[in-house]
Length: 260
Image (cartoon, rainbow, N blue to C red; front, side, top):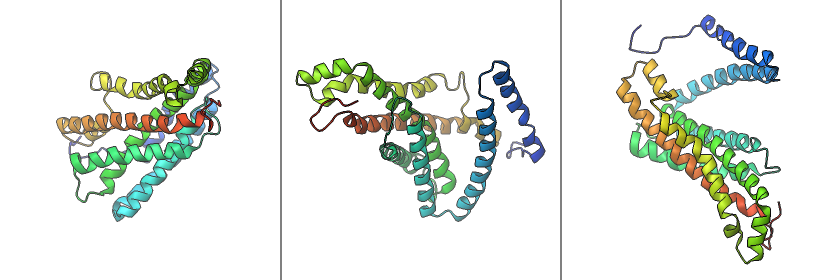
């Protein structure tokens, strides 16, 4: 095997990944988990969605237009925000636009810092660099804000009596739910912090592994992975904070009374 590039995977070799699906499907059937249908549907969607995005990215990389890159990023933010809100069983009728604002703001701020100040590709809007970086930020931030939003509502519901007592004593809505906000943001950030603790010891992350498989110097791949891990931590923290701050006011009416 040459270290100069990626070892190609043929269509036949890709088809053999069905073996992996049979393993997970066998576990689901044996334990009667009721997950066989979503597993098969998820597998089909994985093949279709990744194949389509492969063609889309090939076109975008070839054109390399800043406007096309921006449009792609905004679509990714919209989909991520909608998915994050749908993953919150404790929240109903929630406007995913708040999720979109939080994700977009945190992703573009952190992503711009990474692209402009740390990696500095030429040109600065290089689609081959910008889209994967922003995609990694979005994927992790989406999970973080979903956890934070769900935890915020569940905490306030569980402590409704305490919150109403504080309000009756003259506390502002922020003062009444501040502890709940802290718990919610902590819940969103904890998985990312746990990943920082074990990266390189328990897990070899995707970007680093992909670069090594592509023939990159492991030490250079490590540098990129450090950037990725820290940018994800920053984006998750900022996204969770923004969403919680935008969300807690929705729990109160115009007079400042709890309305869960």
